[in-house]
Length: 607
Image (cartoon, rainbow, N blue to C red; front, top):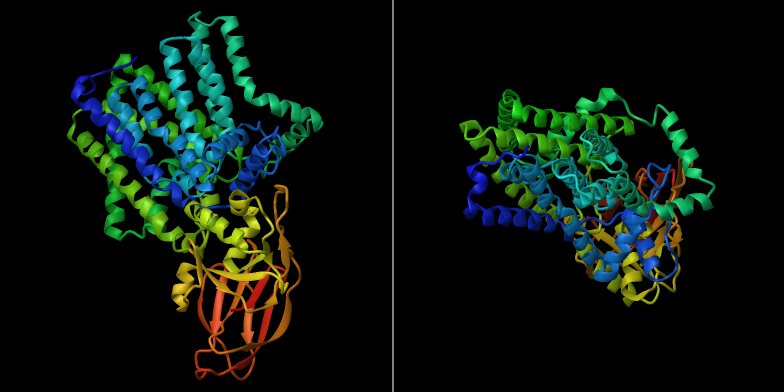
């Protein structure tokens, strides 16, 4: 049953509602230029680029949990976006626009569920700090989870009100595409079955429309079925093994923690780690969120008291429970992108309660706090992305993001190249006859398939590391590190400060593959080894020691007797040393001992 009130019927507020939705979309898009480049997204862009070049037609999507694939819809969409934008940044902006459709979809779903007020509140709630917000900073197919989940919910609500074929087809197609966005959307199957079952109970479901809707839903899977047949249905065996492994799948016992983290848990992390908010501000934000939840609970009590609205409340609570429990069973850990489906559904319940709370003072205060928080957070998130990614100084906490229900480790300062800098990087690499990169630039290029170079000039002959004298060698350091070390860059690529390398002392050379092999690089795991170097530094020269690969511990560095080099600065990738007590113009020879399990990925250069 749809319930309306004076607030809904006031035509003068219609423009304000859509202006707010547009503002939420625009604020979300402000983060797109600072979206970080990372391995999985670079691989997907490589597949899309090869598709556009006619080099391959992907029939299966990315591998999920290192186990199974789904259809190639994500690759095909990415190819379409890349074909329109013709650039990395343009593609990310278009993808961000699709993701931002979650706000108008939430509004329409809330309107169908209860009222325009509920719809607007649902949209505003999606703008609050959460683990899901990291999807915009580390984009991949899961940025489409929220809009697709909300599209399914909208179709379910409208189908129960008006059982038309287009809504039935939208249910099936939306479910399949949401699973492509991420399998954590699997809980939607209960909402789809409930909507179809209710239509069947009312004798409003017809066989031919149902079969036609199923056919439409299966269209994205047809290429995958062909791929599966060609590969002897290997995914069926892999999927069965995954479900049989109790250490891989999850537990119902984790559902309460998952629900809390999906709705509120990420707010604390954003405030403490990224925004570095003062204690009073963090307390005010969390108090505002608590006020909103309290008002929503009061509204839920009002809904329960009225027989006409009790059924709708029970439907929403059942949907939240079904999606949360299903998501909890999928995997033994809950990553930041696995909270999105739960959050999108659960916030609909909060919006319903807030809308039903009416004009009670605590409800009015709660709604006002939400409006302010949503706009302020989106602005703050855009500024934070600018601040960290533009300086190469993101306090990245891998453990916190990939297991949100457990405390993370100490964040490390990490450079990930933002989308706005990919064009500059491509142009710089293409301007070099035979470039070889070191330091943070080496780590970036090692994991991104030189995609910016392919997009800029169709080349991919840049090399990671190595000491070949005929190549142009450049060391890339994060802007924050270069500033800390007091260095003046010779070239700049976004947050990367580039310095001409004079001598290479260590680290292997890696050639960029011509196909999107995945994973692109597997670090060596050897026993600890120690190697000695005699480092000669002329006046003005410095030493940089970098770890080119992820998940490799930084090398231990020691200097022998005599002159010693001092650490000027360091981050998660590189450390820079120089002789700080040398006389002007003095040349110094230093004994250097390096201990590591992986000399192949330990890049040592003089610049």
